[in-house]
Image (cartoon, rainbow, N blue to C red; front, side):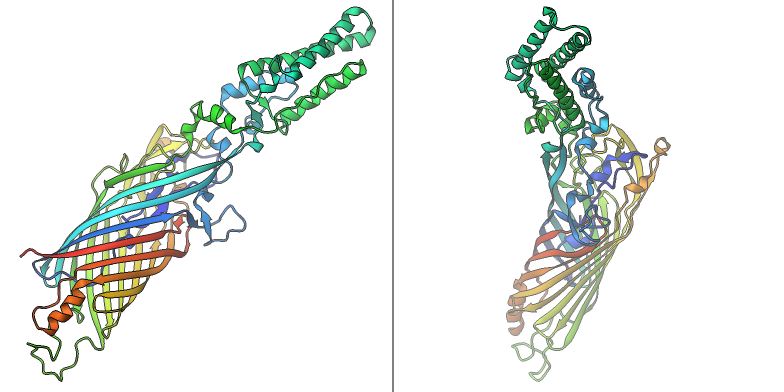
Length: 561
């Protein structure tokens, strides 16, 4: 398990079917999230037990073609920036029953039938998104020969995403707040009283000719208006908000009634529609109706083992590991005049190969949850082949530069993707298809210059670089030929730089110097504890996490033969 990238949604393209799967955060395996490995190997017959806890946390990514004008390519942007525009209409297209119910009284209330694009409960947007990967990697490495070792690593991973939403009720065009239009409410009572007075004038014979005809039409239209309001209030149905086009038409229609009543010496109360929807509208009309299931939910996968790594390492050069007593110490073969072996520039070079294989289905929990568009998988589920170079360079006894470089080949495979329609991109899709994918090769580099504070402790800077090529997706099912799978890989390439510090306690370093001076044993027992903190400082690609990494590693040597 390694560097992580988000599979986010590009701008909605209504001419194509979009996959729900592209909204998920997809984990890309890479060594840069593992512990730092130096070029040392266990000696023949020795086992190194390793435990490596790692925490990755990010709320931002490095932008590409951001929807925010002030954010340039490579700048930081919130994770939610890829979810372009308000979510209300996109997650919750107007339910047909509610829209038809509203428009059923359009004639009586005096507004044009509301179109689907004008039907809104309010603007719903992502407020925050936070992704987190917690991993506990357990492994072992055994020295087969003094210069060859084999090992394995089992990363137990827990991945979660936390999402929060901001609901702007002022943008709503409809509301369920009809409490002011019940039969006993002052507006209805006063309006009914004025309507009764108008009826009395009509029946009394005081009006005649065109005036009488207009008064009868006024009475009927006003009664129909009030009846529709009362009926909707009794049913708890929707009405337009005042700022909406339908609301403005309602207010204008009732103002016309009031002017006609005033011309006859009567008075209607002022109609006041709600200015905006409320949170209660959101809860009752969205959530209570089951529409809340379409929201991207908080997700958590694991703690589980989804992949397994096996590796072999071969030491080519070792001028650093101390195997002989320090000159001048008891038992030293060299005369006191021999040079100190810790002086000068010395090298230790090791190469390695690694195979990373999935051990469970990537299309089901706990690997990932296909029904949640904000899901964070615990791995990518691909088979990867990796080659590595580990280079240590010592400058005297105080300064060390360690470099670990990796080149990974991610084998192509197929995975299940859920499909959603363009106008409902975040819904739980019922359609599935099998996609071919090639996530691309990656390169990672970790450089650690360190200064030895004493024989046991060292402090250093850490810089890591990660680069991923463009991923490729293709259809395997002709049923979805109208859909372009290239949208899944949009902004999939990555470049990321992180910088931080690392602190190491290597007990063998302290013990071995004393042992060497007394010529009691060689130095190949690296009891080790290290911690590191690294923060992303630059990147590009659009879906590249601006991640913070905290890691620790524990190494315990055990002689087995």
